[in-house]
Length: 315
Image (cartoon, rainbow, N blue to C red):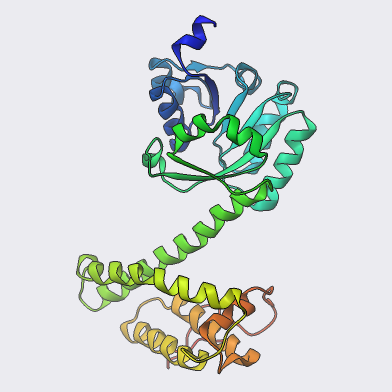
């Protein structure tokens, strides 16, 4: 066994030293891994080098240094721009691409890597940089299971839970984006509620307990509707879209009365109305899934967020 192997459990390359990449390289150093890093702005590696990391002079050198290469870049375009000059070094490498991407971008990236003799697994990190190295943090992976299992200790050094979603390289990106669509819409709804509260003389802290209780209650709604949706049951025995329209319009009117931007609640009203127009007035709220599953018509009726004086959206 070489002296290098006795000093640490293995060696890993990290390409991209934004906040996430720096956190990942740091977590690997904390676990005793040898770490080679590369970043377009080399100065970002200074503190990591001080802790024992090796700064590669080029992406090709960084890729050549180790079998396992972790990519933490801005997007798929940046990944390709960095890897293309290093293509000759990719043969036999295992790439864990933790860059945000769409499922199709992930699949295209895996095909490109395979054409150059490398294996790529996509990863979707569900925590901020502060969560890297923490046992409760989660990353979704997809791609060849054998490579995932072989390098799982490295992945669990990054986040305590490394979950393989399947062989399809696009699945990790899909699960990540599923989380993001729920995260961003949930955060927007909270910020919207804060704006409405402030217009009525309240502070964010005043509504926080109610906001948390509301968010906590969503889990039971998810479970209830998931079972019915998978069974194809949208009977209006518990709720009806016609009732939902009235509720959503009350929310919209409350915003317009308060003089608060109503783009978000107007969009909700518009979606409910489209469900009504599609013949789902007597069906459950969950029938909107069938509407959302189809491409929208950009030339059809809709709302751009503007509202009339009575608070209803302009089409």
